[in-house]
Image 1 (tube, rainbow, N blue to C red):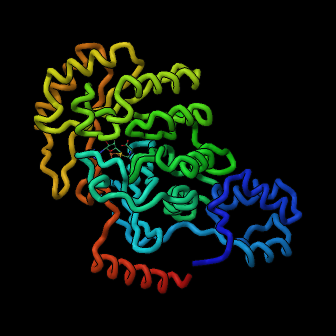
Image 2 (cartoon, rainbow, N blue to C red; image 1 turned 60 degrees about the vertical axis):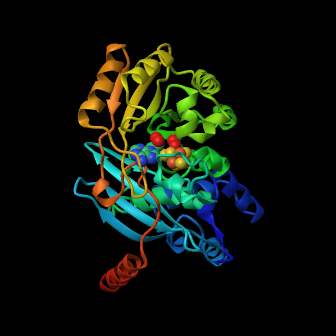
Image 3 (cartoon, rainbow, N blue to C red; image 1 turned 120 degrees about the vertical axis):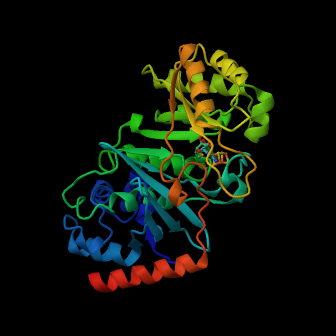
Length: 370
Ligand code: SAH
Ligand code: SF4
């Protein structure tokens, strides 16, 4: 473990304090943020608007370190998945989904997840630990810098970020909020608040707290229109039932003050929550809510007894909701040939694959003579 301060683990405010403590001007923080996050530079000696003396001091005391990529793979449909090591055998996954002019990065917030939804591979894996700021923002850093030398030219490649990878982001509140602050910072990634989405299983106190700090887009993983079924699918519902959750979301939207539409995710599981009776209940539950409903046909993984409904059942569920005046989309399944689709992220690769990828990486480094 390095004893150096990882500058990627600091927000702009924290970096400002760091420089003040060094007897330097606070604006050095903005200079470093620009080098690190806007241009993807991790070598402090290359930061030419800092004095040589300061660069030497910083190189001695600090480092800029994103987590280590140990596996990278492209799907047939253009989706790219990375498996990233965050130390001590813990692995996380991130996925980039290109779609026309959009490139959406799906970011993880925890190793595993403690919520334990009955349909989710990440939940079934259990919870290991929270990710640090460097490990969260480092995912965006890695993805942004995977487009050749585009960053040197000041280009931004990722247009959207969704906190929908492994973990419950609101269970790792502070680092997630800090990471989103950097995502929105014009000196860093410059994404608009509507292009940064936090998806949550519905932790009410944390949604209330977030409403005072941030106005990013909020997506609620609803999955059932009544408490009896939701208790079964999303166990945290027993603590924060649907009515309480919807009240908290209304409060969040009101604080945003910009006529916002909330997205509700509804995973469709064959014969579990895909009947027309439940569609009618859902239509009624959300009838006065300015929202969009996103249906996600269940993605299978080993050990799961659930099944994906037929295309017909998915369609009839959608059409029923539409007939009641709702805006309803069906999420297309991307990247499931490389296990990169929703709910398939478990952050594991077997040892053989890992050895092979390490060897490949070493060879690549040799040929590029970096
Ligand atoms: N913990 C947060 C964010 C990560 S989960 C949350 O639950 O919102 C991201 C999305 O993937 C959620 O909408 C979740 O319901 C969905 N998901 C999980 N398992 C899935 C599966 N097996 N098939 C399809 N979608 C799944
Ligand atoms: Fe956790 Fe989200 Fe998976 Fe539920 S769906 S177990 S909250 S990652």
